[in-house]
Image (cartoon, rainbow, N blue to C red; front, side, top):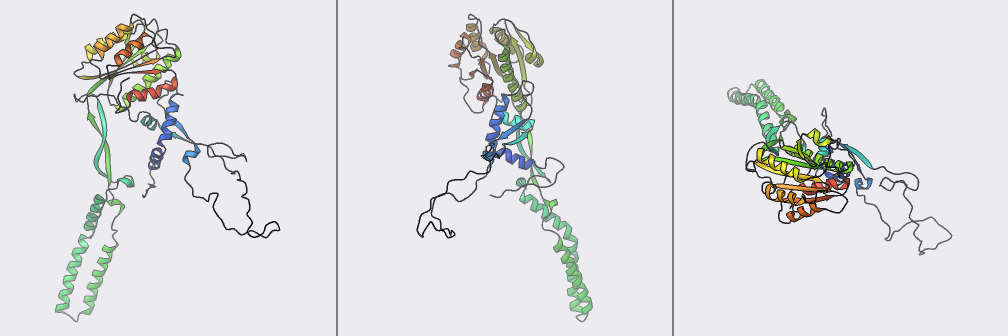
Length: 426
């Protein structure tokens, strides 16, 4: 297979093609580094770029060399210890002077560092949310939510070698050569006709005949010097992102901010919701996001208050579900909207309130919602809220439950909840 490298001098992004090829080649290592990096970030810088480290051994190219073993014929200088036919013991293996290829120093104190490079914010988010989508999205109302697909959009004069359209380029070449040589070809025909007439009428006019032949030869040489194909003729297939209107969608984010949620637990919940927000705004052009904080009482808040307010209290989880139902009935009809919900809590709820939560969820929310996810952030044993929700999950495939114990679980759980073409049953 032939590889083309675009080395044309551009004002910027002149290494874009090679960079994209590098990202594709080491995609698995890069995605692993991105997944590890998300756990080390704060809530406010979760969407920045990242410096990726790839072990040196993963970048090494295969090399053919002569291995140990086999039969070899060698000529050695004379000695007084061996006779013809004697077998010589193989010398011990020598340690290489280079590093181990994994960023470790060798016995001689030398080695190779791991390869480090930076990816941009867009590249980071593309890798972070690859293969994710809102489950069960129904495309019925052509309004509000817009997805994008890449489609052909004519031709352009600049592009990468892989997008060259040969037929279109040859058509341009033929048209250019016809346009540039049409006058000369017409003149040649006139001179050839004049030469034939001169030969038949005045066969002795040799000097005039030679003059006409020289003019014809000069015009043909000019035509021959016109290149078969020029850079002006090259045409590249052009692509653009085309908006695809789909159904309207709303995401309800319900977060427990009661006193039992310590700062570390709240930070995990916020990280999850930041990922969710970035995923929604990155994947879909417009989507409504409703933020609800609750302790003993629930309140609809804006993005700033949702992530940074320090209000706290007791725990009545049903208050958040009741407010979600009220907002759904008032602003988001299930006939016109795809309704989604994500609830985060430590599971510490009043025992007599958990059955009410299960009833509200099953009777009033899951009957209208396309998908609802519940994450419980705790290192303790599950309590009544988890147990009641678990009973519901057995009979509702569009309700998912996941358990987060530490920061390391956030990204794997998030991908599991919103991965494309998977069953989201608990």
